[in-house]
Amino acid sequence: MGDIILKTTDYAKVIQQTVDNDYQLLTIEHPLCKASVSLYGGHVLTWQPTNEKPVLWLSKTAEFKSGKAIRGGIPICWPWFGPLLDTHGNNLGNHGFARTNMWQLKAIDITPDEVSIVLFFNGENKHSAWQHAFVVEQTLVFSTSLSQKLSIENHSNEAIFFGQALHSYFAVSDPKNVRVPHLDDVPFDDKVTGEKQQLDRLKNCAGPIDRIYHNNSEQIIEDKGWQRTIKVSSNNCHQWVLWNPGKDIASTMADIHEQGENEYICLEAANTSWQTIDTGKVKVLSQRVDVI
Image (cartoon, rainbow, N blue to C red; front, side):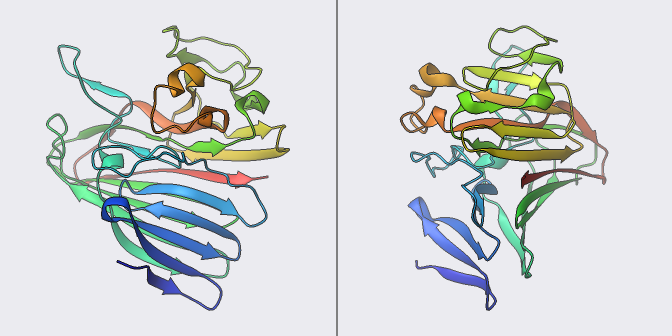
């Protein structure tokens, strides 16, 4: 199957491409940016404003394979974050199923200022431990900034509980060159040591690091190597997760290319504890990324 032009103007276009195993990608070409999105996982893969370095990191060994998340870009962890444990402590799966299912394209709009893409994912009984009926609509706006909005609608006859993270992989010169200063002295749970409600000031973001910060304020990623600052803000997300696996863990992960851990940090707008949506109701979560 060849490329299909889904929408075009005299200055911009959105193309559907087919990659390994017949997975479809949407490629955005616009005077203000270029980007790509996978329908598998509803997953933003790349975004690069014109005359800037790529803002998102995508592994050279990322796999497009049923049941496996794509390494890099912005995986959507939903309807839970981290492991889902049963009453016996057995893990029923990590980070939910939104990132390992096909999403559908609903709409594309191109203007001189931006490209907007709307995707949706719906169903029920998607997992033995999470059988609710739902519709998740994702609105992506690509321009000199990137905005991402999830609208979650409960179609079941009871309240539903969910957790989530927009698991953003940000491209950097080297984690050793990077700080996230607005997380200084913010309480965090350290998943490496198991200690909770810690306080400190990170000198850099070199791994291994895996922290849940209990804070929802706007964040900035300062990269002295590339002389670049990235601003990340969120709405209705109550935590930030900061993660880099470090060399030893990354070397065991086939979908992180050699020394790839030196090329990114993850800063994730998240709800790591259960959130509630009553039957028939909608909850909206979002983030925005700017290069400043």
